[in-house]
Amino acid sequence: MVGQRLSHPLTAVFGAALLTVPWLGLHTVFGVDLTTGVTVALCGIAVIGASFLLAWGAETAEADVPRVFALGILITFSISLREAVAKLSVRRVRGDYGANEVPAAVED
Image (cartoon, rainbow, N blue to C red):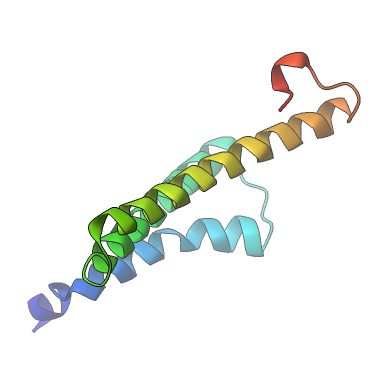
């Protein structure tokens, strides 16, 4: 009985979604200040869960749309996430140095 419930395909999706909850709950919703190690660990686990969900979504979409289109959407998401992290890093550096004193290596 328990083995049948755990072998259901949506169990893995639900588990991956649960991986993102600690980071979203503690940091984003409640604004708890965490140590660097805990922040890195929770953020890394959340990224793993989110990447699993993106890959699962692309694989599921292959049933309805061509494979190339599903992979193109997955690549677009992954690139946009990478660019968002890069922009956030630049914004943090600009906040530390001021808008007019940005080091040359950090400019867009």
